[in-house]
Length: 135
Image (cartoon, rainbow, N blue to C red; front, top):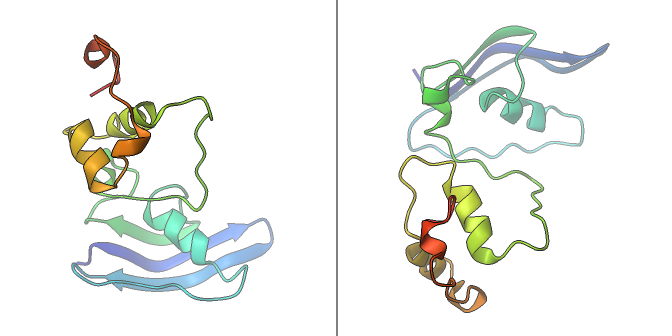
């Protein structure tokens, strides 16, 4: 059993068949690149694998589970093609928002250092550590 699998996955959008029985098995430690023209089904396949879409036919597994199962999804890291945060959020607030999605997030200072963001994040005001959502 692979880490991520599509078995005869079919997805239709009205009369258009975006995926027509795709088989894919990604094993632990493997990488995958999906190449193809617009409309080839690349994004649809990824959306099925991460549980954002459900196949019309076939089977999808993520870590051996149905992709919408929280136990499968908590092991997944995903960066969307486009992401936007409100312009008024400070760097610390964006990191706190993302950290809130994880059961044991890394410390704010560690993340700032890892990504070279220390200069973009002035020290939090006194008492900020106790605010909800701020690690």
